[in-house]
Length: 213
Image (cartoon, rainbow, N blue to C red; front, side):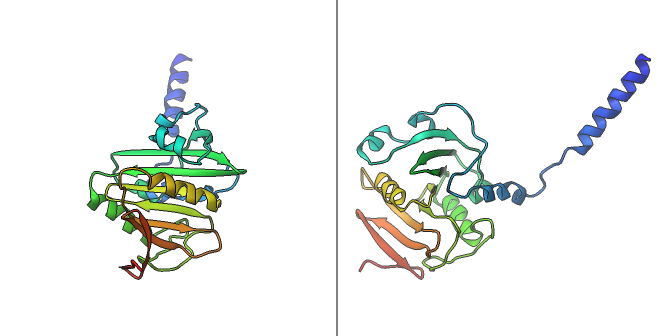
């Protein structure tokens, strides 16, 4: 009887291992980002109560801003830049005005790796893999978002709240002369607005040309 039980257990264990689905394509992972809709999103989150240092934000800058970060919690939502190797990543969700805001920060080793991740993302943006050229006016996503890129960092903030776009732009442009190569904003039914932030000014970008008019 013991021998029969042992053999049955081994067969069951073997069948479970063979039945386990393996991820063979990164698209299987990235597809999870379809679940984020920017409004009232229900996600699997970690119940741990977070503080600002957990999500790599500057408390001093937050205090001087008009941001209200309520119910901050970690999220495992994956987006296109997660295909690339990073030195650090922070991903969290918070609630404001009845909306769940997704905030993701990717840090890269150098500008080449950052640009590579960014340009590949603009060639396949969102669940429908929309492609857009630098400065091109197009609707990239059904949901509103803010996206910033500098030499070593990409920031994505998914929200349909325009005021949150302004608040985060103020947060990320506050301080010791920060520069952002690209600042993209889009509301759900609008086309994406391309800008750059240099010399303490937001300037429009059109068709690969940076305008300082």
